[in-house]
Image (cartoon, rainbow, N blue to C red):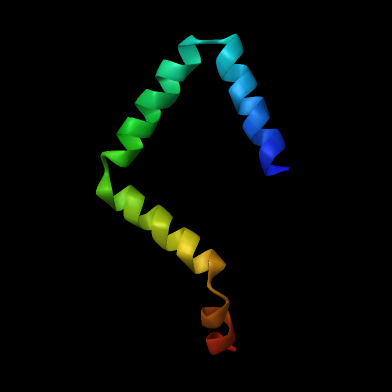
Amino acid sequence: MKWLLLGVVLGVLLLYPALLAVVVAVAAVILSKPVLVAFGLGLAAGLRSTRLRRWTR
């Protein structure tokens, strides 16, 4: 499923080259805000952590 979504995104970027500039600009804005990057990394780590879920039971 992940590869299918990646293929769709790449296909859209090939069909509409102007979208590549928009995607790069949005990524640059998000990565320039350290709070958003830290929140995203913390959220991703929390979703993958099974030890934390066992500890809370």
